[in-house]
Image (cartoon, rainbow over all chains, first blue to last red):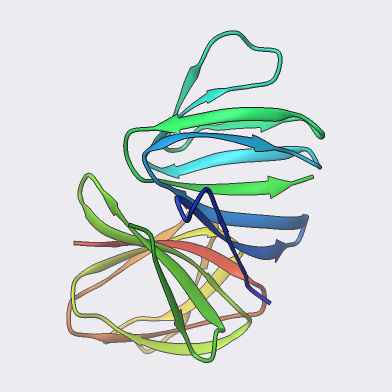
Length: 93
Length: 93
């Protein structure tokens, strides 16, 4: 099954699927700033475009270009922002 | 705008967006075999999972693992098949 999800009035859309290691989503983030909460550990991989992220317990935004990734622990919140449509792969651990 | 597309009774779903270089889609392909047609040159990048592809003018299927890509010329048709849900990024040139 391929699940369809959307958040923030359709400014973030994703498709959910299963990998050999567990659940994952691919998605697109429109320009803007968004706050997400995690229930599991997540590894966010930037596929195309670029994200700035403010991770839990960090004071500074950091830029993640296509090909880079960051990890967010379970039960935490983090912010991302972007100026361009950005594609990501999120793997849940 | 993030466009939503689905093909083959929902066994292939994709999200369309814009990159600095032009139009692109990310998508998920369910297990099965599918034939696609191109109207523009396409570069298919396997993000997660694995695809076998039979490209135009080829006689043999070739396997593309996550991290690899293949190119299909405009106005051609190609086949893909997979045993596992597979995520891709398709960039139109």
